[in-house]
Image (cartoon, rainbow, N blue to C red):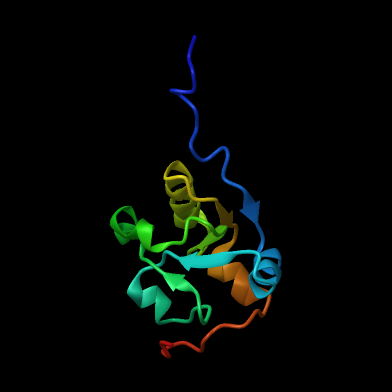
Length: 118
């Protein structure tokens, strides 16, 4: 009997859209962690969120409060899905914002203008 050895770590990652993420973040239900690289962050980001580039997440994940629920975001939702799976394996409640900042911008949700780092 196989007890989850072949279990897909991505299968259990909740997927949320940009509008839902924004509403939950505004109401304090979730925190957001942006896992994009510095050059992507500089093109515009959500003011006031945690920023840990994906390559640094394996060593910096303890900076995230494990008592909170987190939504991971990247450009289109692929790297953030991986980040959410990593965090969930570490015991942190995390979801993926599908569509990433591309969808966030498409929904005209608030973000910093390109080139301005907050």
